Amino acid sequence: MTENTKPETVLHNSVGFDDISDSELLDIDLDLCTASLTRSDSHVTCCSTALSEDSKVSEMEGDSEDKFRKKRKQDKQSPLKRFNLRYLCVTDLCSQSWCEQQMVYGLEMPYLQQLEKAPEVELGASIHLAKELEVHDIVSVSVKTREDAWAVKLLNLLSMITVLQQGGRVRELPVFGVIEGIFLVGVIDELHYSPKGELELCELKTRSQPSVPGVAQKRSHHLQVSVYKLLFDSMVKGQLKQGSLPQYLCLKTETALGSQVLEHARKLGLNVSSFGDLLELAFLNLRFSDIPAIDSLKIEYCYQANNSPLGEDIVHFDEQQVTRELHFYSMYWIGEREAQGVDIEDAWKCRYCDFADVCEWRMRRAGNTIWKQRTKRAK
Ligand code: SF4
View 1 (tube, rainbow, N blue to C red):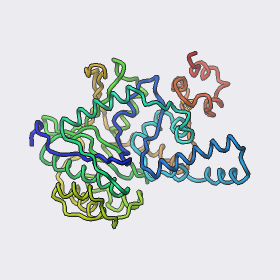
View 2 (view 1 turned 45 degrees about the horizontal axis):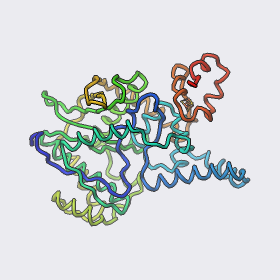
View 3 (view 1 turned 180 degrees about the vertical axis):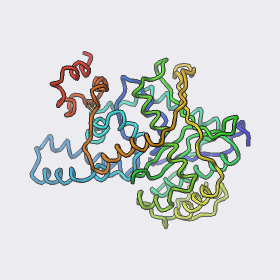
View 4 (view 1 turned 90 degrees about the vertical axis):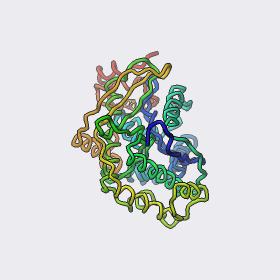
């Protein structure tokens, strides 16, 4: 299969289950830097909303003893349970690496975050879409259940496995897996084979400024692609267990697939009727594919205004370092430690943070003169 053909069709959910487009989230410029969890799994969104509504009611009416009791009980739960999250997106971890406290405030007080979708993010997304359309067409599919939504990801994965096996290039490849006991989900921007035949991951970051990002943002980007490699490698090496999806995501394998999902499965030549059938097929294909692990990780930066390249980073994959980092982040999610704000060397991030006025971490350090200087907000 040559790269000039458009060999596959990628299915996009059309009714609100599109939850994993990681491409642009971390590529916002400094003045827009506010961590946010990407969620549109309807269940999770509902729960987050309920949480913020609770807080508003408390402010308006005063907390009753019942509410205090409820809050105390909630606080004892792990953040994963408290925020009702079945899984995390890879970009959630990247937000966490920027400032964990900011990420938590984003969940607890989303109404304090900038509501407008930044034009830069939209422009970046359109550049990604154009790139995606170079390699495949996109078709909208109506999904009725969460199982349907995951079936769409599996169908995309199956068609991309075929392309990779034939030496082709794929974009927006879904990856998922369990790391440190937490289910993680992401989307790899691009995978292709280098002239040497090595499998290369390429992440495109568009910038509204004609410059590459600073060290702190690059650190997040490096974490992002390193976690993608961990997830992808575990999938193609057969280390990810088929039962993980039903177990972590509470998906029912016996659920019948919706008519549009079935139609597209048939177009791919797949004879399936339930989510479990498709899951089994996807895992069989992964297990018996001869797709190698990812050999190299690259991040490309380009200027949004004219699409000109700004530079590229070849990321050194340090498994021990990434694993240590992920272990540290997971400790927060499973309730083994409290959320932390930034260290003093990163105190400048507070100047651009939507939660600076309410941040207890920042206030607790307000007596420190160096901290005060570094977090002083521009008038
Ligand atoms: Fe993090 Fe600083 Fe924002 Fe607090 S004010 S959430 S420490 S960036």
